[in-house]
Image (cartoon, rainbow, N blue to C red):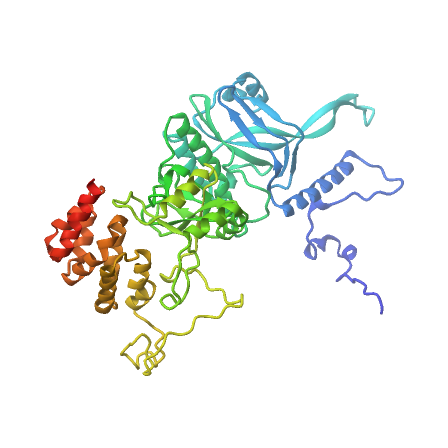
Length: 582
């Protein structure tokens, strides 16, 4: 096989002055040609320096720009010292910045700061304007040492010039165009996160030969606070999916740490709403333990229109769940968009195995075609419930007592396409898909009477039919087990008369959540009487107004004439109330 020889199109030497027409000529990419007998000048040597410098910067640009490692900045308000740890970074211009040891600057030493800026109107830097400043690490060239300059001809005289050019880094401040508002620093930083996150124009504030380390706020000629995450970014060439979420997560965790420290210093508890401090939330993040109460089914941290659940999880699986959720969109608290949030309680394998069995719910395959995948989840409500609800209080209290304050994590979950509590169905693990609903012989499912609209397939079902397949009297009876023959008979009558009435099932479910468990011996008979009297809706609404108490619910039911309770049932209610008051 013959060698393949590269053949250029034309002779560049013959082209002469027309060389720029057939090639990309950049004078900075020109090298000096060395040969014996040639007289070299300073210009020839500088040409090679420029060439190597540009080539190195091209490599830096390919790698991207940002902080490679280290360069963590901090500011101490009491000492006035701004400290930057050792590290490396690459600037947008391709310069590699290397800081070999920690750099400490006294922000109160205005004489030194004025002297360092003497060539740039140094008098203006004796005082700082009230503004926001980006703390940057900048590439600089420093002329050092002295070399003798010999005359080049008889008329010239001997002189001196600097001998070396030393590359170094310099810490500086760049004033940002964003005004410093009169607000609490924590709220200011939250607003800056929203303004700078994903904003390509924010990088234009920083010189190309510099890298941002954070934002410093100065008021009354004194630094007030420093955020070492704003404008800071890791090394990357361009934004990839999930980078914005990771950047927000880093800034959110730093701000959350300062929020908790500020509340602790002010003797405040941590039961607060996220909207008090944050405008944006990452899809994965930590949250204060005090804002969650799984024992009573209550949460305050997230907005009311969010769908919030809490569930235990093995510590070994937490990283995987967080990685899956990190690709979801950030949570904008200023908008009224819905969000499905799960608060995760990390447990060891031993603790998870112990408590998981106590929280699981059985399901009936005949009434639930698709088993709910997250059987351990508990629904949380934005306000304190008036009555005790079924939250497995004892189990959750035991879990909560052993939970570390800083280990609670929330994750955003994908919005479900339907109210089935199932995000996806796995078919590749050896399981069979659920069989289709039975037909009545005429091509309709669930006893439907419309045989031709859907081509006889019966696939499309109305909302009530879907609801009743996942919530019905059989399932409710498992949650509130009847304790007497009268209760069993009441459930059977409810099933016979109202089995296909989704409205009645929904009202009874809501009422069961509001009636305490110590009334279970009489609750089903009362519900049957209320359904026959068409008083379920009135009972459901008025139970919300009943004040908490051991016997308050029972007394209210006795006084509600529209229930039309049988005399025997009234006597049983009176007897139970007297027994509870003892």
